[in-house]
Length: 138
Image (tube, rainbow, N blue to C red):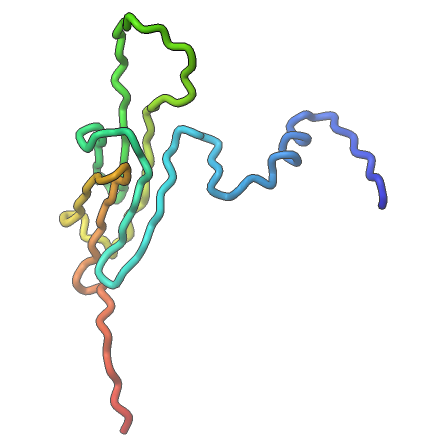
């Protein structure tokens, strides 16, 4: 076993080395919900994990080839008679933006929210859909 002495004049280098092994889906902005993106022959599907929200809480916009999914938390100044002893989670505002490919039919995008998952379907344009084709052997 060899001991290696390192000179950490800059604390950022130490932190970079310590936290460099975090998973790739670990974001610097912890308020951003994780997404899964799947592709089928007819469409792409974006699944956003966002439990505890209502479908009217989301805003989904398409502008200049960008798909933007956002949630803006309304500030509540409600005073409660109960005393809060511990609060380990909060619902925070977020915004995710994705670049749309020219294969996507932006006019036919649809979305639904069910069981804490926002599912956005991005249909492919007709000319881009992969049609199975059988090739005969001569």
